[in-house]
Image (cartoon, rainbow, N blue to C red; front, top):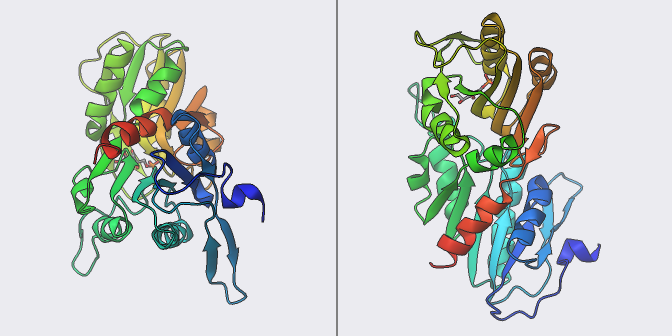
Length: 310
Ligand code: R5P
């Protein structure tokens, strides 16, 4: 077991007022960035292994008694979720003062209601369980904002928009596009930060992998030769971005970039999108090849401004 697996920077314990950051297996790199944003807060990763029967074992190190601890773990897979729940209990067993749980990508968020009789409301039941041992929860671009209330504890949502905007400021952008009306607030906020025009397509979902898109009747600018960025919260199968890019190509745009907060890039989504666009950007809520913007400053701001004040 390496030192980092225990805690990279030994702490004094018993309430120094510093936040300690622990990065779960799914979010190690982002957690380390958050610790740097918190002024080089003590950072560590847990020791995780499997028992012969496949059950998970983990251990957190360092002197955490009486300290404020930040756990960072996206829950893209069921294993990630289990690790998060075990980490929370490990932190509690270690006698932490306050436990702030950061779930950058909160899995199951899209099942935010029972669409058919007999279904669970997965987002809400997982929110309750994740919040059980937490004093506060922080997440990023939750699929449906009402889920925030489902945590039943102080819960805060960072946005991926500022991180992507920081990146786009360095690149040519003439127009921002949301592939659906549901993303209007997001694209408007991005447009405001970059001082650029925006528009939204109309989207009709055919099934989980296919969508139909239509442009608005009034285009805000002549698209010929323009640099257009499609902005979405999640890229999953890539179907939405591919259709949006094809529509833009028909309008004669000069260059297409796609940007998202959560890059799941299932199966060949990455290659399919690259085939119809020039650039692909995502934040670091999930590790992926397009991870070029970090939400660490935005998470750290919430931890310092909102969580520390609880
Ligand atoms: C839908 O409401 C979301 O904003 C995304 O557009 C959607 O999840 C993307 O999925 P996919 O990449 O599978 O088209």
